[in-house]
Length: 313
Image 1 (cartoon, one colour):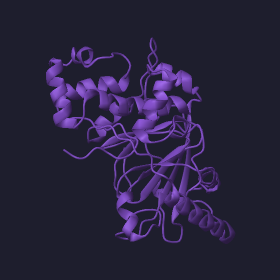
Image 2: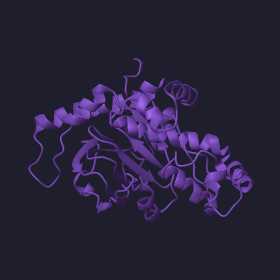
Image 3: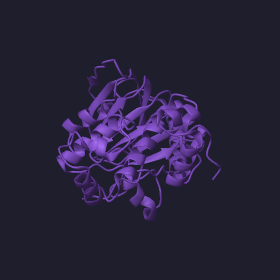
């Protein structure tokens, strides 16, 4: 059983077909929302090279649109400056609000879902043979060989917006524009290397009964309060389900559900929902929610949820 991911993630089962099922966001009660699927936008026209080490794409997509599973031989950063996106890989689904970005190592298959209308900005990174990361020293590369959710500084957000997004195949980039892109690229890589990783993981089991329960919690973590209530639809007793949580996930149900609630809070916060309303939406008082977040992630809720700037590093 692989270790749980170390970033903000709601893991999914390997395989592109399951990606689509996991990445569909839940419709509001009483409404049915269909998911629209689109292909990756001509990645071959944005190939990063040693001369142009960071290439940028911009794509405006409506809520409930999913970019189908695909992979690249280069590294990638996914970011939206206006809406929430959810990016699913074979071991997790990452909630990415405008205050965060997701680093994806080379060769990792992923699907991107728009939780809200969003400007999906994609940065492709040239990776020299045997290297991984945004130009970090070799002894720091291991952390970049897995997906990482990163805090986005105002500078990084501004740099991403300034990166040229014209594809190959048109007029050649001018020497002046190439120099500017190279300067921007160097700053983008430096800001990424300095960005703090957001550590939070939610694992999913292999047992089908437990997976069914976990996926129901992911869809609506506040529908039931007790494990006994959640276990009713699994065909297993609460005692069996509790044992499966310990054996397959290495945690109690309460601990696991808490991680799901934190991921849900990130998505709610991206919509500018006030902290007190987020707490109430998730079944907490404001003070209890604040204490839970601080205990879980070691940050005040405002910083963790991207509603205040992190302290200067």
